[in-house]
Length: 98
Image 1: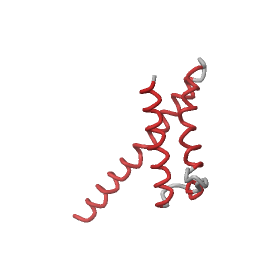
Image 2 (image 1 turned 60 degrees about the vertical axis):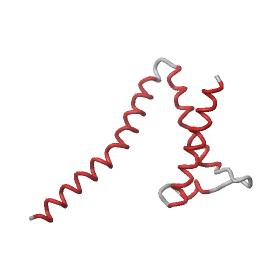
Image 3 (image 1 turned 180 degrees about the vertical axis):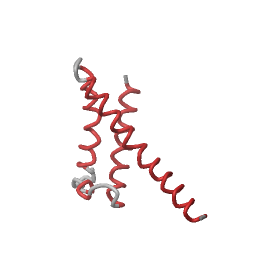
């Protein structure tokens, strides 16, 4: 049980700090850079904690459809820009050679 909490704490910390770093670089919305007086990026924490609570959708029988759609959208959103970038590079390389 301790290892479960430890892993969850580690991944939460890493996700919050990664999102905060992205916000500082301008790759995420600026409101995510707000920190409490103790230095906790509170809005990053709130955004990160939305995803574990979404896993509670699996408790209900009918909500599995919602979770399946959510996983599909996130997967497509993560792979589409990469594939689109590769297609664009191929297109520009072909036009440079011609």
